[in-house]
Amino acid sequence: MQIQIIKAQSEDIKDFRKLFLQENNFQFVCDKCHYYGWADAYIFFSNGMKIGYGAVWGTDKREDRDTIFEYYVLPPFRKYNTSIFHQFISASGTHLIECQSNDLQLCSMMYEFAKNINAEAILFEEFIETTLPMAGIQFGRKASDDDNPAHFGGYYLMQHGEIVANGGFLINYNFPYADIYMDVKENCRQQGLGSLIVQELKKEIYRIGRVPAARCGISNNASKATLIKAGLRPCGFRLKGEIKNF
Image (cartoon, rainbow, N blue to C red; front, side, top):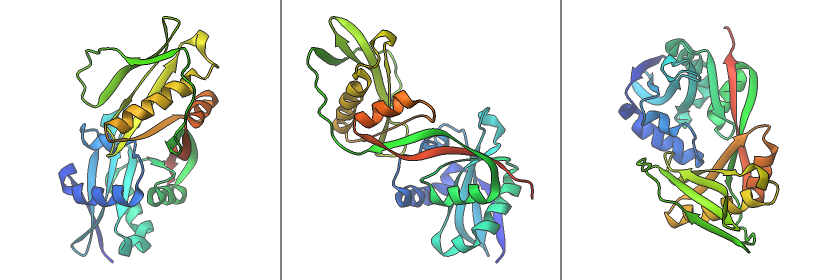
């Protein structure tokens, strides 16, 4: 089988990306890279037929384009993944791979082609609805001058007239996911306030027709416990590895 890999525009891989997202059915944290101009795309051909695509960006500097972060090949051609991926590395000139462990295609290529693989973050998905008590605590939202339509910020918890936690969520990821963030005032931590604001943010996300998701650093045990208590569960990891010399 003759493989050809050609640099393309994001528009050229649009249909393949729909297949990629539909097949995986998870929040893809690098989805926005295509819409903000942070990525270069490549199309894979076999004997003149389009069979898949890949995408690269810069891990530390976006303009470097040194990292493969997306890879999709149609099912009938996956038996050739080793050959295709090897040629993709050569064509893109990359030396790093980033992937989600729940992205089985790229994750399998990472374990075949990379070394010094590390997990940098834990990915969370919605699991259960919680009913953590709100006695004496007010959940609200402050007016914001942020004009980013993808940013829903300004949410807070107030206790005894004091704002004790802040949070929000972003929707610049693949539909229908919304990515939660939060912060609890330092002297108010370890009281369950983080889980409480996440619980309320989940409700706000559902109100706009989205599905909650989140992530935290691999060693951030406090955030991990907070998200689990709020009804989320780990669903994967963000992995990074160095491409081996071949």
